[in-house]
Amino acid sequence: MTDGLAAVASLSTWVARHGHALVSTAGHLGRHGLATVLTEVVMGLALALPLALNVLVRNVRDATGDFSEAVGLSVYLKPEVSEQKARQLTKIAAERTGVASATLITASEALAEFRTQSGLGTALDSLPDNPLPNVLTIRPAPDAASPSQLEALRSYLLAWPEVDSVQLDRDWVLRFSALLELLRRVVLITALLLGAGVIAVVGNTIRLEILNRRNEIEVTKLVGGTNAFVRRPLLYAGTLYGLLAGLIGWGLVAIARASLAPAALRLAAAYGSAFELRGPDLTELGALLLTGMALGWLGAWIAAARQLARIEPRTA
Amino acid sequence: MISFERVSKRYPNGREALTELSFEVHDGEMVFLTGRSGAGKSSVLKLIALIERPTRGQVIVNGDNTGKLPLRRVPMFRRALGVVFQDHRLLMDRPVFDNVALPLIVTDTAFREIEKRVRAALDQVGLLGKERVAPLELSVGEQQRVCIARAIVSKPPLLLADEPTGNLDATLAAEVMGLFRRFNEVGVTVVVATHDLHLVRDSGLRQIVLDDGRLGSSG
Image 1 (cartoon, rainbow over the protein chains, first blue to last red):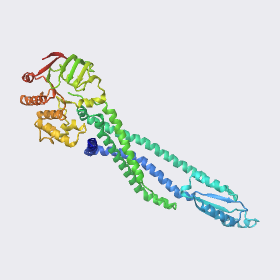
Image 2 (image 1 turned 90 degrees about the vertical axis):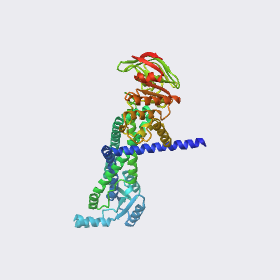
Image 3 (image 1 turned 45 degrees about the horizontal axis):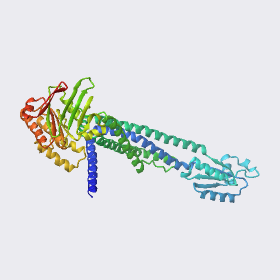
Image 4 (image 1 turned 60 degrees about the vertical axis):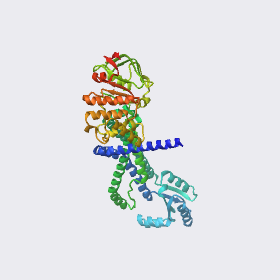
């Protein structure tokens, strides 16, 4: 019972000490307003860039999902397939998962359109039979328009005995998908580089803080303070820097989205799309704040570990 | 409590501050370290407080051989000491309370206990009521007493003082020495480095005389 009470008291003191360190660190950062703001802005920009790129990739993906109307397969049926059979196949194709729509262009519709557009009416009249086949045009669902999914759909359609050939605008999809993958990698590399930059900025800020507080650290060590004790407020400072920088980064991207949204809307409308530019969502905000805090903590820890080992008490 | 066995200390600049120095200070004793400036008094205190380590010989304090104490145990070792510095080493941007409370804060003592013990320490040095005052607003003598309060607040068994009366007039010096005597009377071992021979003679206590880093006479 006594041990239990002692443990609770000890835990309570530990929590109170950490709370005190956190509050006093926040107060310390607040008292050094300009320096803190400048550091925060640099870190916020470093965190904003990868977030902005990530949001850009997501928007492009969303937009191309909308543009998947432009991606399609033309399924050419064999000449002997009747129009009635072609309509049955169209229905089967339309019900398949991953297919947004399936439309039949009958051989007679195709010939009529060709007659109108080509101006070869008289020549076409001389043909004994209609040479054009029935054609299914298939649009994939936005979430089933990746190159591999389209290839799978093409193989499925090619396996039908009534199908002569399937034409897929695959090159365009592959190129676009490769571009998106490249962008994703650029985001990753940028995030890694700027993450290292954030660690360096926090590390340097904490290093200067340690040098400014050298006397206090020496006195603390003289009266029995451990490196862990001295490090505590510095780690809180790094974590707070990261948290605030994350909020600034998120705010910058949100402002950029708000200012770009009307122009994006107009552009999309010009292409007949209802696409709307989206900003960072809550998951991205949470990830950004956690990443900022982790990078801040790490930068502070590295600087503190290096510097504190070099500071030992001196006396006059 | 403290044992120096053939201790030598050479600093990186080549100066040998102590040479083959041997002496002992017993539990509950109060002694003076005397000698002219540069005789090695501060070096002795630095070796006791583990601010420096001996180049040769052994320094035993509270049973620990300071030359072999691992770094991770140094903070715990220092918590058993109270040190009054010649230059006070106060945190000028913190009020008196925070300065005195520091040795308790580093050991994660509960806030209520810190408040009680800081007030008690300030009461002993005659500064109760000045908890919220900044050290810069205090006189040199008062700053010295804040430093003493910080040294005794954690009730260490060993108190070290380096020229504690160096900046004080005769009356204040006598007051400060009176404080050390009172601590010693309740069992604290006290080592005072001073060049003020009047104070030493008046006290009638043992003195360890240093002469150019060597033992002059220990009487």
